[in-house]
Amino acid sequence: MTNSSANNSVFRGFFEKQKLTGPNFIDWYRQLRIVLSIEDKLNYLEQPIPPASVPEEGQLVASEILAAHAVWIKGSKEIDGLMLMTMEPEIQQNLENLHAHEMLQELKTLFAQQAEQELL
Image (cartoon, rainbow, N blue to C red; front, side):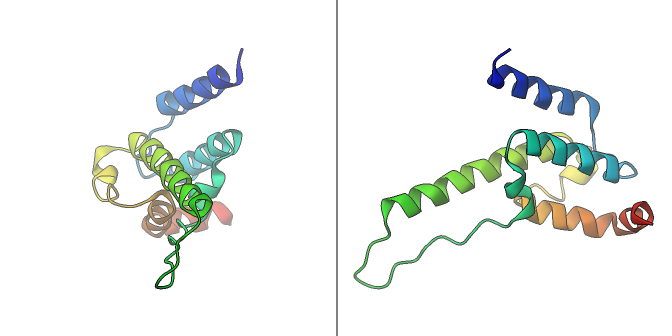
């Protein structure tokens, strides 16, 4: 099995088995972290999108910096979609305009009591 097909089966399994309904936030979050860790994309969930470099007047931003920012945006969009596709529509509709990190912060706020109980 190639790495790509192994990763696809990991994502497929996550889509089929995990649907965030609210009461299962802790389990959903744990599974999401496992899938993103396997894909080496956990950073998109744990860190906000870095701001784009703004050059000083008369200067240019290096193409490598622009390319790195574009890669970050693309990766974040993939994780945004993964998260949204694994949520019940009632939860999903309030989070559609957020990026992965922002979405997670909002979900943690929504389900804070559940998260606190899990930690205890």
